Every structure is written in structure tokens, then in C-alpha cells.
Length: 273
Image 1: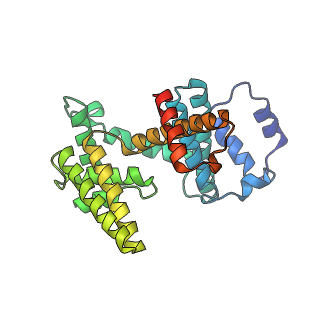
Image 2 (image 1 turned 90 degrees about the horizontal axis):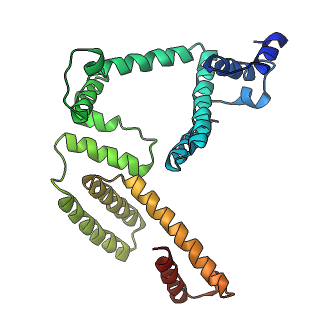
Image 3 (image 1 turned 135 degrees about the vertical axis):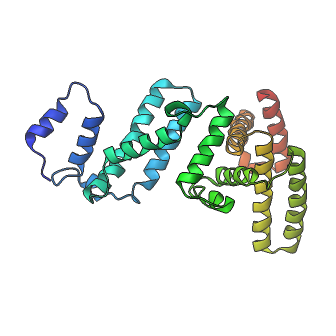
């Protein structure tokens, strides 16, 4: 498709852009006389871009930044439109097809709004949602519901979803205390694997230990991904303060023994607490 100069002028001079213009701009970028880079892209080549834009939108939410969120949601929308354009060129589906499908899904999964089903609270809404989802996806076994969990999720999120769905089928601990006991058990098994020097066993037991931690977090009504992120951010703040204290004494961290660094770390921890 060759884009006319009239179309280019209209898009360049548009007083206010909307969704239709965004779809059209992406079509132009992918057209014969469009952008060389945009024309070369495939689903796989921009896969990481979609992930990064989603994470940046999440960061904007975490920062409570409205301007940043507005920008990042636009970047996410661009990725959606771009992927749709690739499929449109293959005559597989269009952006309208995606909108139609998600709207139909919303109507079907909200029978308490668009139908006659009565619900008392959010818990019943989620219960109905899961039942409808299982029915529409023709999942007849509990294993199929676990197998349908997105495998591209970060490992902690993936593990937590698996545990949650297994719990719905009745395979779960009765309390956080019971789940916590498995952390102790897996810690002992990891220690034994480390003593054996078997790298494959060490990797397996480390994974089991992390999985047990995720399930304990779930029973404590915590999101494991969020909890680990908070700890990692806390580590970063304390590391930066430790380095600042070391440099204030005209020293270099790389030249100090761990015992001395631990003393600086304790000072940083106390200052930031």
C-alpha cells in the first residue's frame, strides 16, 4: 500500500488524534513508503518491547504518577495496535476484531450485570468468573486449569497462580503455618543437596524452596512478586547508603573485607530504618 501525500498531510496536521488516527499511523509506518524499521518488525522482534512497555506502565502506577501513566498506557496501546497491524496484513484479524472479542467476553463473564444472575459480593463475582472461564475454555479437569496458566509470566507470579488454582481443587495447605513448615523442610533438603555437590539436585531443591516460599506468601495473603520487589528495592537503598558511608571515609568498597562492610551496612540500615 502506497500512502498518498494527502493522507500524510492530514495525519501530520490533525488537530487532535484519536484511536482511528493511531491505527492509521501504524498502517502508514508499515506501508510501502513507510518507515524501514517499522516494516521489518515481526511479533517476535518486538515481543520484548511489549513486555517493557507493560512494566513501565506498572512502574507509573507504583509511583502514583498520572502524567507518566498516561504516557506509558499510550505506549502499551501502540504495541497492541502494532501487533494487530501485523495480523491485519496477513488478513487474520483486525483491531476491531479484538475489540469485538474482548467486549463479548466481558458481557458473558458479567452475567450479574448483563444478565439475571444475583451476587452478594466480589467473592461471588470471582467465583462465577472462574466457572464461566472454565466452561468457555472447555476445561473439564483441574489439571487443565493449571496448564492454562500463562507460562510467560515471571516465575514467582506463575508459581503463585499454580498454587492458587491447585487450592481451588482442594490440594492445598490449611494455613500459612502449615505451608511454612515446608520452607523448613525444603531448606533442609537444599542443605543436603549442597553438601552432596550435585548441581542438578541443588537447582531442584532451590526451586522447591522458592515454590514453598511463594505458597506461604499466598496463604499470608501476600503477593510474592510484590514482596520480593520491595525487598530488592530496600537492598538497593541500603547498598547505596553503605557505599556513601564508605566513600565518606575515603575508602573503596572493593578494598574492604566483608566484616568491615557488614559494619557499614549495619550503620546504613540503622540510618534508613
